[in-house]
Image 1 (spheres, rainbow, N blue to C red):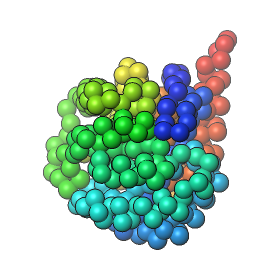
Image 2: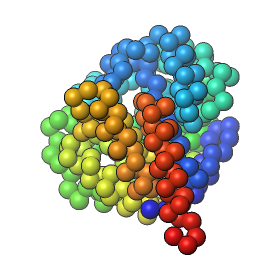
Image 3: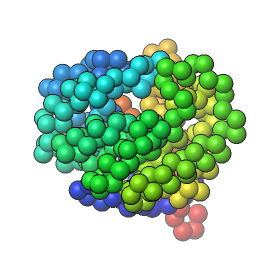
Length: 285
């Protein structure tokens, strides 16, 4: 489906969305993330990985210092900052692309923005700490609102969602309304349906299949299917192929941004998908 173009306003720049698919590269500086926990916990290795992700074609780097994998437990703001701030200090002024920080804590968001982050990616969609929206508004940063149901430590016990995509759409609309009520300009908001965040395995494919419903909210859409459990295959290479399929479907269904671990591989996928979309929307076709 054709994507509506948007101009996403961040703290220090404006980003065009819709002309091509943007890639958000994942950089986890945690000991327990589901796919690369501990790999980039050291600030020097994290710095090198961020530079590599930009060279591979990432348009945004998303740094996370607290895991939200299924079953994970929460960490204090102090511990999250202990992991995060040394990495942001190393990256300051070294990247030409914006830095996003994956956090739900207003205290962490505040310090992340003062250390160079231009986007806050709230995995909880304002449900854990509503103050984070005011913090983003005060600094004119970008805000990604992810749909989360329940808490990571209880996801395994949750029943399937009813009226899945309409429920997600209603929740995201309400979340965006709360963000705007806290002072966040609409032009700074991106929404994410939250694949894997409290949804049953079989429902994640349904989200991708019906993603177009979210376009009715008139906000840019990000999708983060990379290496999620519903895509898991017998080998890492096969899982990358499965992720490529999910990324393709997401973009064909209207996603403006995809959040992925394997930037180089997904860049190749998106070159083809974006070219198909350009031809599909051209006059005479």
